[in-house]
Image (cartoon, rainbow, N blue to C red; front, side, top):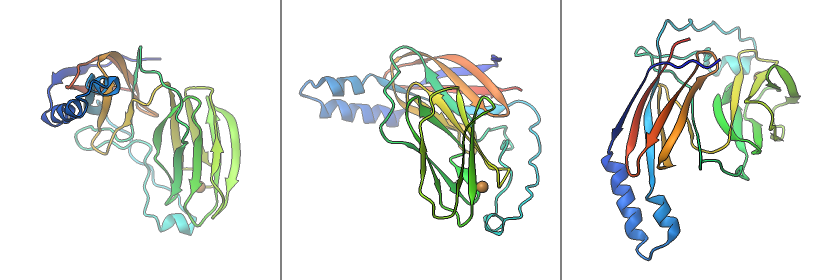
Length: 244
Ligand SMILES: [Cu+2]
């Protein structure tokens, strides 16, 4: 179910990016079409916040000594004092954005008994490469819509596992050895996406001018969408609120 929550959207010229665009335009004084296209882009920047009382972090039951040394905490829902949501996935959809899947895989590492990054985007058709930097065994149990896609052990020092999963909206990774380990690879049709930082902030640059649907999604806190206009040489500021 999609919820439409309040969004605040404003347009602002950002000196930094405007200067960058002038530079690009000057470099292109020869009339190259490619450079001309680059000057017709703008950016979207803003924050994702949660309006509500976030669940308290769980106490992790860590028995593996390798993980115990990593100093990790529950990251299921990370919301700061101002409501900023960490690890929300912000994506754009609309005409003219779709792109071919990159030939390079999206890399998800297991480091300190956490998947890093926890949330990322995968252009449909692009492969995901899962690595293990830890001196312990992890087991990657991958799900789409609750059904197992693959379930593979990856001992210390094992080679990366590379898979291309095209179905479903989100590829969810769980570790059967360390039950707090979760990763979410969100399927998208273009590379114009971002994952929010600790404060809930994000920025998507190099977006062709146009009107798009912006979606902010969090695995636990839900989703909200809004129409967003991107103007060339400007940064559209957005504030998205999750209300689940
Ligand atoms: Cu593990």
